[in-house]
Image 1 (cartoon, rainbow, N blue to C red):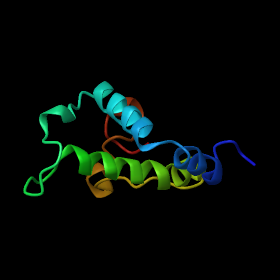
Image 2: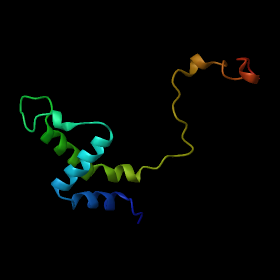
Image 3: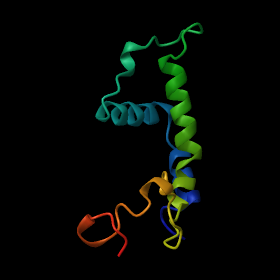
Image 4: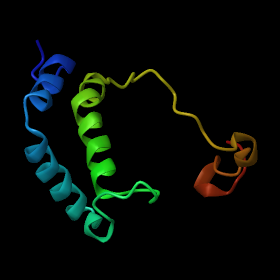
Length: 101
């Protein structure tokens, strides 16, 4: 089995205590420049509070990373292009002239 398969990744985070996951989450958010200390610890009237955000992040880490680890990009799949009609032939042609070759 692949070491990063869904089972091993999900099991790894399931076995970690809430306090340890909170430390991981807060460290990762700090690296991204997000400071949860400005939020109230618990406030039912607030749109977001520290305990709800940490609980949500713990649920995410215990359920989703396996699906992310199992994701494999299909090299044959063509990614979508925004507004392909606008590009027309402007980018094609010799030396970027916009003329078709």
